[in-house]
Image 1 (tube, rainbow, N blue to C red):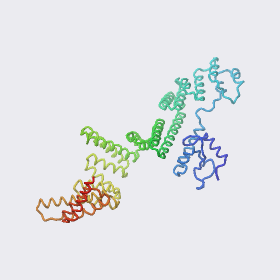
Image 2: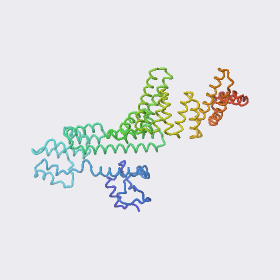
Image 3: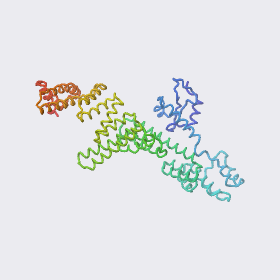
Image 4: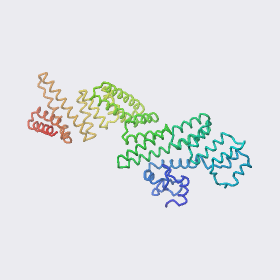
Amino acid sequence: MPFSEKTKLEVKEKADFRCCICHKLEVEIHHIIPQSEGGPDDIDNAAPLCPSCHETYGDNPKKRKFIRQARDAWYERVSKTIFPSIDLQSILQDYVKKEELEKVLEKQSKNTVIVDYSFLVRFLQKFKFFKISPIGLTEAKLSIQKNDYDTAKELLEKVNSECLYLLGYVNGEQNDLEAMLDSFDKSISINNQYEKEINDYKNYQWQEYFNKGVENFNSGVKETESNLSKKLFDESIENFKNSIICNPKSVESYQNLVYSLINAGREDELEEPLKKVIELNQSAEAYVDLSKVYNNQAVHLINYYTITKNESEKDEAMKIYETRIALLEEGRKIHSEDTAILAQLSNAYVEANKMDEAMETFKQGVEKDPMNEKYRYNYGVLLLGAYQYANAIEQFKKAIEVKNDYSSAYYNLGVTYLKWGAELQEKAIEEESDDMSYKEKFKEALPPLEKYLATNPEDAAIWDYVGKIYANLGDTEKSKEAFDKATSIECNE
């Protein structure tokens, strides 16, 4: 059964007729646990959602807890509005004689708020019983009720904790978050009377900006037009940045800021938010992502160096590699079993030309995750570079066992046999030996190289290698075919 009209109205009223996630008007009442799964039609299972949030979150079972938390937080927020309706009679009784108050109110309905606030203040100022600071504060409250924030700010520029608390609220409503925090800090520095209200309001503003950021991000993902999509991602970035101003310890805000920056193509801004994620919760994913950022920075400088030959660019790149290594070594101490960090560290050692450290790290990676074909492959490349042919062959074969279509592994397996055979051939010539074992290595090079060529038929250099191998093995016909193929490809380039 659907929700009763009474339940729907009660939920809407508790939510101020707004979505509990993005706070837009025009809400639908959503079953948190679906009816199909036995979800009841009572108020505890009901959540007010706008059509957009219903589509984004409603059908995702993993978001049920989030929807319930967002609903409860919004209900509490609505029930604790910072400025409830002002009871003018109780305010005035603090500052004027009873008989004078009755004269002012006798023509007013008891349930009607006096509209002429400036007249009210002028009237109060005629009496010797009023208190100067509270009257200014009262007028400020009345201005806030009218959304006349400029007037309120002028009135609240007096140093006491309540004025500063209210001034912070006004600044927040005007989206001046830095001024909001400054006023709140000053209020608390005087006394902590409004600390709870301040924290509640900052949390409310954080939630508002965070939810706007999520809404922008989701819209950007769905948008098919690239310029509009980027505009939405840029808006989500600003909203997540504002949420961070309200709550600088929110890991979720920094993480979502990272996702938005990536989707907006603003990778050059990723370093600082990723550092904050690491500072706040030391997640393995953040270590890996920041490592990639550093690697991109270093590669960019190295590319410039190859053009300009400016040694300072090369030196700066090497410093970044060292920073990357230090980051990953720190991450590895915290996440000793994380294979992604280990892979990044291994590659970082290679980029920094620290081959001994790289060799040891890849070896450890293979031991920790023997079914990781990338560890096997990269370890094999290092062993090949160290002329440890037998060990390199073992790693390339293991990589191929895990991933049968691993083209690069076939290529390097063939190259390893080829280099090993060439070394044995050169040694036999130098020693004037009849040792023909090099031919066996050449023969073993052919199957993996031909397997590589099956998926990379336009690689002229490998066809040339194959031609030379067949020539050394005395197979003139196949040698000619391979050389002709290489020549044909080069002519067509």
